Image (tube, rainbow, N blue to C red; front, side, top):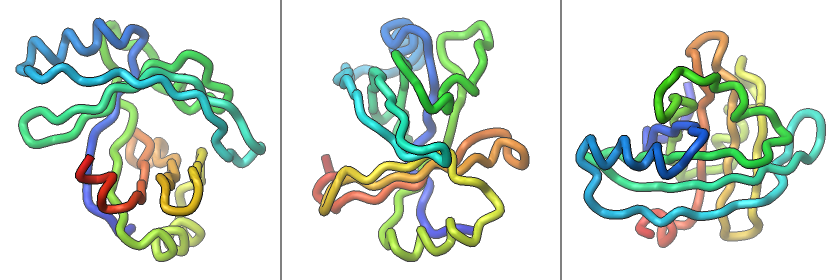
Length: 151
């Protein structure tokens, strides 16, 4: 369907500290850094701002992203309704090595673009496809320089 390799699962939460506590209970030992992000994303309706807290960490061989939306003008994260738990599954993310090939696939895809961002030459590029109708979740595809993947 698309180029890329499964890289992470992402979850939305209302309280990032409570969410991380749930992962600590599941074996998370290394304390993740919580980052604050406040930037525009391109949507089919134009540029919309997203402000959020994000923690990214590895546990048992998989990368996890925990997202606490603060101000989500896109509405993308509001589409993960409360389930009574500390986190709610939101999307998978695939690592992409060839951004131009991926964009060609996206342009011919049955899944609409929900949002995308490009942080500039040599920086992170990502696109979220709305696959909820067929798969039940969004799919994110991300490209970044190799040095950033190694982190």
